[in-house]
Length: 322
Ligand code: PBG
Image 1 (cartoon, rainbow, N blue to C red):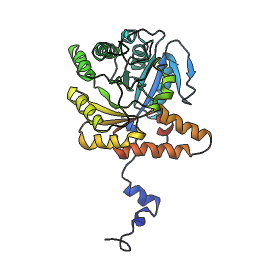
Image 2: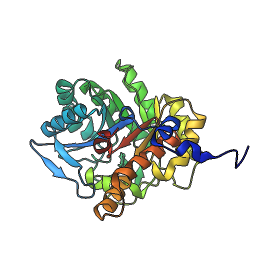
Image 3: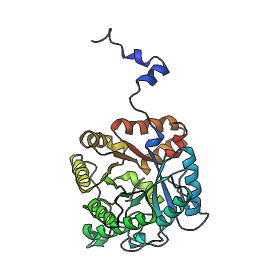
Image 4: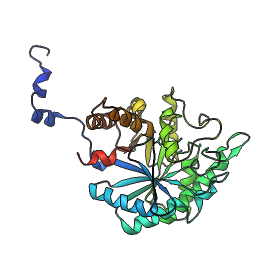
């Protein structure tokens, strides 16, 4: 049947009918807010490239999280900025590491807030790379040890989920085995499975003080030109025991999200990364776009593409309107 019998505008006539036929809806239940924690007390250091985001000391992080929880935010993703860095990231494996301290304090004050910890070495190494450098490049198999140790110490601190973002081969298996060996069978792994080597991470590297001091991350993160390789990464991580797989960044990779969703039966997360957030903020500050509508449209496009979970710095601002 075609025009004039078929008229698609019939179902767009009023807000009510549009509501009735809407295919995808954003929900606060799907959103995760990333947060940055650093040492000290009463510290709130603005991240200039990400307006509205701060590095917070543990006391202020707890305050922030109770505010978020009251607004309906159920889950946060934690990144740490340590006081000192070292060559391998061992510093992130200590019982009193900055994220471990944050987890203990948050679990005590806000036990129902779901805590996800990013697992990686780049915030903790002097050179800013995601693992141990041998012969001028990150050594895959040596790095697996620090990643597993970091995951274990986060588990001991009481984290609900770990999210390795390093892109080493075999890390999901290594981390799963280490967690299970100590009885942490119940802690899921959300792997940054298809993580691209992206210019969209620029603002985050200011936020987490994790910019590589030489070279780039192209020897471990994925080439933005590849899509079949993303499926190999995803399949490999699921085989190794990933409970949730992530595609990152989100916006330039909606095709990857859809491809993963259509071919794989585990939940799919999309990371609406720092550069995607900051571009929106910059345009809004110039008065060039309607920020609220744009954010809603962007996050809805991630849902439409197939994301079950969306990690976004817009979470706090948008959740009020959902
Ligand atoms: C750590 C990590 C990064 C991000 C999340 N975990 C940075 C990177 O890989 O350089 C990026 C997040 C963002 O841009 O919002 N490896």
